[in-house]
Image (cartoon, rainbow, N blue to C red; front, side, top):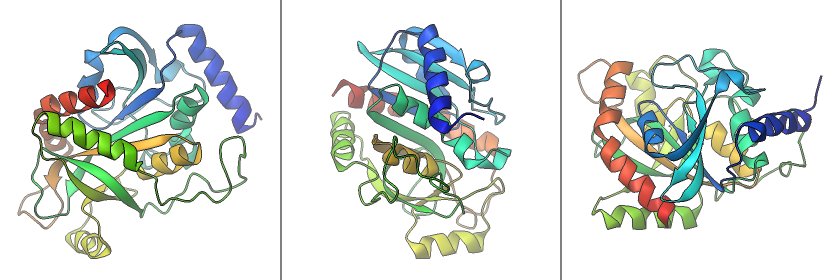
Length: 272
C-alpha cells in the first residue's frame, strides 16, 4: 500500500498529464454553486472518477470534476463539487483533493458552501464571509501519523481563515456595494438536518451558520500551508427558526438565486 505522499505524487502526475495550467489559487464549489465553473476560459475538465485517489460525488448539485481554466486571464483550479463524510467516505478521502491542490502548487483556496442560517439576522440567499469555525463533525483529518511533508503535528488554528484574504474579499464586496457580513460556521456530520434543539445549542456555542462540509477541508488546507478564505451561501434558515421543513431542492434554488452576486464577488476577489 502506497503512503499518502506517494499517492499524492501519483495523482499529481496524472493531472499534469492532462493539463499544463499551473494555478496558485483554487476554489471548491458547494451545493448549487457549480455554475461558477462555466465562467472559466480555456477550460480543461477532468472527472473525479478518472483521477487516482478521487471519488465520484453522489449528491445532487455536486457535479464531480476538477476544472482548470482562466478567470480574467488568471489561471485557477476549480473543484466542481465535493465528497462528504456522510456519503460513507473516510475523512482522509474527503480532504484528499485539497491536499492534491497543495501538492500541485496552489497557494490560496476559496472554500464555498451552502449553509443553514443560525443567526436570526441572516436571510436566505445571503452570502457570509466565514471568519472562524466550530468543528462538531466528530472528525479531524490530522488523526493518525503526521505527514511532516505537509505540515506540523500540532498546527495553530487561530488564523485558519486568513485575515489578509478576508480583507481582500471585503474589498471585492465593497466594489459592488454588497454588505458581506462575517460569521462562524458550525460543521456537523449530517446527512440529517439539525433538530431545533441542536440549532439552539449551536447558537449558544457561537455559531452563525451550520453545514455538513468545509471544516475538515479548512483544517487540512491550513495544515498544508494553504491560505484559506471561506464564503457561505445561506440557502435556508436552520430548523426551528421558521415554521417550514428543509429540503435539498430548496437549497439548490436559493444558491442559484445568489449566483450572480457570488460570481461577481469571486471574480473581483481573484482579480485583486
